[in-house]
Every structure is written in structure tokens, then in C-alpha cells.
Length: 146
Ligand code: CUA
Image (cartoon, rainbow, N blue to C red; front, side, top):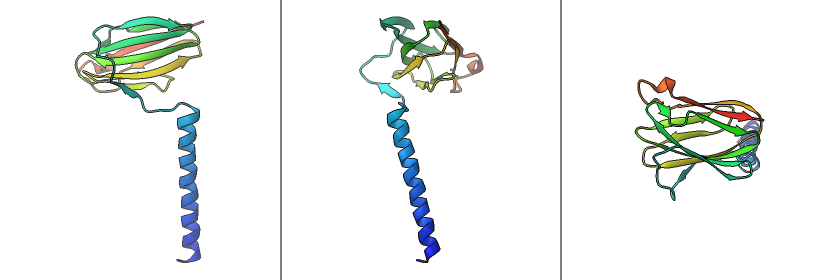
């Protein structure tokens, strides 16, 4: 192996190590994670929102062609929201704009994400899985107020 090959291999190894460290920092320090599939909860039929603690809420969402049953949710700033999602018919998506919540709504299964809303404002929800002719109108919103 010539010297230039050794240098290239060394640089490649250093860049790979840097990416690995970056991934580990993101996964542990910033809570970036793959959304979970909940196995201990049966799929539900109704959307519900209830308070589970001080500025802590739980939202159950049923996605159906072509709407979320509860299209608008209003919460105070600083709220932490546990979202459980299922589908009543086909596969849908559930992305909350300006957050890293990006779930699949799968019939017969429940998916889960937790998000904290520190800033007041409107956080639009969109279905990001093509689910039929009304897919583009399948939206919702989370309003965070002071
Ligand atoms: Cu529901 Cu696209």
C-alpha cells in the first residue's frame, strides 16, 4: 500500500468515526429516536385528550379517510404531549410541523411519540402518506397559547 492510500484510508476512518460520534450525540443528548410501536395498548375508536399532570397531556388520535377526528387541539405553552395514534381504515401519516413528530397511523396498531411545545403558535398537522383521493385535505392543528 502506498503512502497516499494509507492517508485516504486514515481520513475515511476519521470521517466515519466523526459521523458515528455525531449519531451517538444526537441519539443520547437530543432525544432523537425512532418512533415506537406500542404493544400494550389496544387500538382505540375515539379521539380523546386528557390531562395527566401539570402541563402534561395525553392525546389519542384516530386517523380516518380523510380527517383526524379531533382536527384542532389547544394547549398552554410549555405543555408536554404524549400522542398515541392509530388508524380506522388505511395507512395514514401524522406529522406535526416544526416538531420532530412523524408517525405512521397503521390499522390494528398503535404508534407513539412525545413532544414538548415551548413556543406559543400554530403547529399544523399533515397526513404524509398517500391515503386516497382526499389525502391532501387531511390536516389538523395544535394551537399553543400563553
Ligand atoms: Cu391520510 Cu394521506
